[in-house]
Structures are given as C-alpha cells and as structure tokens.
Image (cartoon, rainbow, N blue to C red; front, side):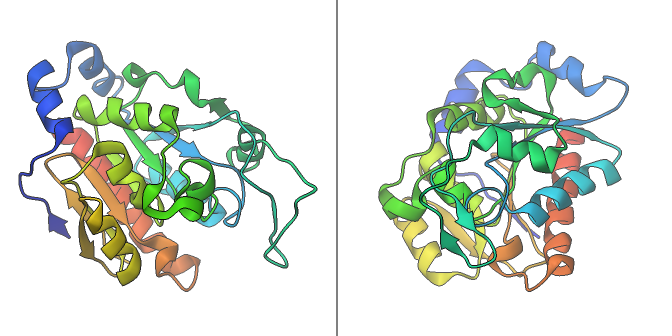
Length: 254
C-alpha cells in the first residue's frame, strides 16, 4: 500500500481556506450509532454500458462486511449506449436509463444523484466498468479531452473539500484529474498507455497489482485496479475489499 505525500491541489487550497477539519454538522454523522454510511454511485448495469456488476456487488458486500451501510445513487439520464453483453456488440435500437438499470444491482434501493446529501454520509465510492467511462464521464469517446458529468464532479468535490474519503475502482480513477485538477495520486493498475495519458493531465500515477490499492492520504482518495487487471471475480474482490477497508479506516481517523 502506497501513501501519498503532500501535493499542490486546488482542492486542498480551497478546503484549507474554508475548514481545518470536518464541520460539526458532518462530524455528528460519524458518531451515529458508530455506523459508517457510504454513498455508492452507479452508472447502469453491465460492464460494457454501465457499472461493472461484480465490482459493484463486491463493493456493497465489502461495506457490509465492515458492518457499515450503503445507499446507491445514479444519474437519472439515458445511458450513452446499450450493449449486448453476450456478443459485446452495441444495440443502437435500445435506449436505457442509468437510474432504472442501476436498480437491478441495488435491488431497487437506488436514488437519483441529486438526492445525495453529504451531511448524511461519511464516504463515497464509485465502482468501475466501461460504461462508467461513457456515462459518468466521456473518457471512452473523447480521451484526455473528456468531461465529467457536472453533478458527479460536484458530489466528489463536496466529499473531498469536507475531508471525507472517496474511492474509485477500475477505470473510474481516470476521472480524477477531470474532477480535482492536477496533483492527485492514483492507480489505474499497470496500464501504461492510460497512465501516460492521465499523467499529461497532471495526475500522479502509480502501478499497482490487482490486490493492491493506492492511497492519496492528503486528499483521502483511494484507488484500485480491479478488472483493469483481474482475471476473475476472486482477484477483483481482493482489491475492492482492501479499498473499502481503507475507506472505513480513513473515516475512523477523522
């Protein structure tokens, strides 16, 4: 596990001006029956056009294994596209909604992202999947010129500015420089091409194996490769579990 050094982030500068720690309003959440509550953002259901199902379920499982609780959220918007996951081919005639599809993973317990109130949560996690790089930000279509959905960006910034941890899994860490600007440490696994691209955007990329995580301790941002490297669900679980464990520990340090 790698620990970040102090760096020059506009997020830290902003937070330092407004708050030297977590506000009393947020801190009250941390003592609520000693139960940590984590928001999870999904982007649909299925690795090709939404959130990676196994990564998402492993995230929720790992949260419960830590005796914490979660609430899933999603954008109430159409997916970028729909894929046939048997053939990996796009299905142009089909249209699906991210919130409706995310309900498949969350067993119906998913809310529109607009309803995520930071005062009710201690941390945020975003699982990966190719669909995330289409739906939450458009990295899959525009490369380094991508744009993060403004609401997703706003929610991530809210957590970090209030010194609450945020976790990004699989391809999701690629949105970090688009959210926070330069200077944030992350891992995308061992994908040299993607790491080099993100480095040109100001990210500080570190190689990690499938069962490893990278912690930017200054910004409380945790990343892991998952299916950027995993060959099966057992391998993906190792990194996801370590990420959730680290998020819980960061919450308890507040």
